[in-house]
Amino acid sequence: MKICIAQINTTPGDFSGNLARILEGINVASVDHCDLVIFPELTIPGYLSQDLLYNPDFIGKNLEILNEVIEFSRQVSPNLHIVLGYIGRNNEGIGKPFTNMAGVIRKGELIATYQKQLLPFYDVFDELRYFEPGDQITVFKVDGQSVGITICEDLWNDKGADDYIYDGNPLEQYRVAGVDVVVSLNSSPFVHGKCLQRLEKITPVSSEGMSIVYVNQTGGQDELVFDGQSFVVRGGRILHLSETVFEDSFDIVDFDSDVDGESLATAKTRNVRLEDLLVLGLRDYVVKSGFSQLVLASSGGVDSAVVCKLACQAVGPENVHAVRMPSIYSSEHSRDDAKQLHENLGCWDYEVPIEHEALVTELNHLYSIHGDDRNLVSKVIAGNRYMGVANENIQARLRDVYLMHFSNAFGAMPLSTGNKTEAGCGYYTHFDMNFSYAPIKDLYKFQVVDIASGDQLIPENIWKKPPSAELSHGQTDEESLLPYSVLDPIVMAYIEDYVTTFGRFCEWVEGQFGDDVKVSGDMGFLRTWLEKSDAINDYGRIVSLIGRMEYKRRQTCPGTKVSKVAFGIGRRIPIVEKWS
Image (cartoon, rainbow, N blue to C red):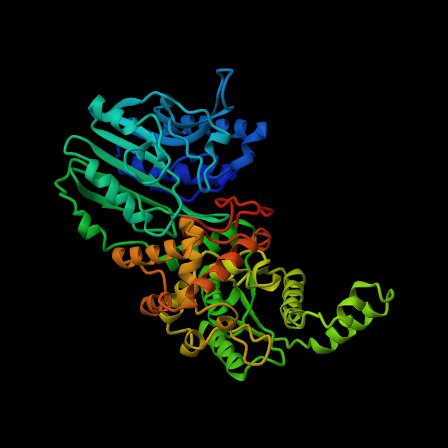
């Protein structure tokens, strides 16, 4: 059997664009005399289409495209079986209105269908909101071999991959049925370690008698980025592993050849780069939204430097506009570092200084002349309770205004430069996190530094100097919070593993040492800090801060999700609550 793995980039509601990619894959498979071509989950409508499904015209258009593919199949090799995803209607009169389907097309006919059985309802997934689950397997013949179909979650119920356990196990049903090949249609977003986890969990369950073909999509969709990494396994060995992430790929695998494949240990050395997926997520968000130009505030700090680098990779440096907005507190080295960065990357450089002191004086004067001694302004001033941090933060708000003016006037999408550690602690203003897209929103500080330190185009001083918003003389981030080597793991443990006590945090850290997982820029410093007498109080202060800042995080813009729990659609915490 000869198969084509059609690893493509779909977009919700882009029926004409998705159809063009489908037809290209069918043509490639036909020309190469393939017996089977497999596309990702929900190929026709795109994934995640979410509440677009409730529009009756959306479902109808999706079925129209399905019929177009059926008609097109008359023009290609009569031996070619086409497997692709679409949305069906549930006509049973009970249950959810739609079905998550895979169809098998050959010679102008829909010869078989499969209804997804296991519907995830955790993290970013909410398929039980829309789809009625199936309960039957589907087996069809290709070149004398029996082929079964699964859709994404159907493959995982016995793998211990998550805490969501279902009654059924489609893969086991196919084992019992004795099928030769199981094809799995997927739209599986990237999460750290997930690519390797797929290989580790799926490869061992293949056998000499049953091959597994795993087809995943690529591309960015809102907060998600899909990593592709499609593969074919048989007999515990990997026959094929797709490596392209930026472009559609149509890889041909011939089961009848004498390819022995590679071991899991060898395949582990080939993994998609985090940086590439950040670029892909940003590129698709920008391009699919109809933009070509990007603008960001560039401070000379590591966060804005990495965002600037990603932006240049995503749309080209000639389309990136980096605006330096120094205040009276901005250091000369920050100005020079940012300017050198822009020169190295080849993007556009602008300097637009801000002046906030006169504005603060004028604002406070205008507020104070209204009312009498009962007025809030008068009471605060008389009681010496004026919050001077407002004078610092207005600098960030002015930068917000300046950058939004550039965006509105010249048509460039504004990027946020905030990271996950800052978002966790609420250590940002709207300047940091309330623009159109945040490329590093799901990266901890040490991950941002890792990207910066690995690129010679980013001046060394940018990632080596102490992080600072430079809103006052000598101010640094770590003075206000904690050293990032400690802060990063506190936020990570709290958000991703729901660790909320100091004792459990100490155990969590030791577990990371045992698993050899990087959770801090300096693991040795982290372990030393845990032994300090005031560590428990500082830990409690940060955890309390994280809990109180939910209202700020809810107002932030979308950004690329790369961790198992990110701030966004997959994390649902009340704003008003008394637990945290």
